[in-house]
Image: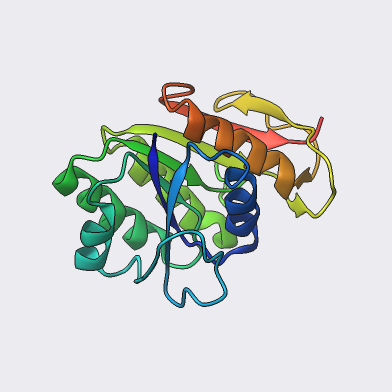
Length: 186
């Protein structure tokens, strides 16, 4: 039974991932957030900041997979997460970045997401990076995956679609290792 640490558990996408994961009792989530109030009570919650290496390292003990769903200083947060994973021996990471991070020039708003992706890709960890298009609240699961290096295509994708794919990775973490994927609605 995989143990999964959700970093950034209070975000709207993370909440959808958590709700989807709840449908699979074999998945054991631990939720990590700066202010973990109002999170689902069936999961352990840890108050912590991704800018605090010691808090990250403590939260990662006993975990099998790390799921990153953050905004802010993503380059620094990513470096802290990678260092904590290496210190604790956790190898599997799934990170949410953004569509458009490989456009030239990179738009300023996307630079943190590019920094996160670059950090994760160069970490030597077993990673999957997802670069979603804009999120919608549509009640649908309908998505396509486009590997890095191919033109990003498609349209805004539902949170439920992203959560479906992420939870498939939680359940079978050997899938898509080393993949950097755009996820969008066809």
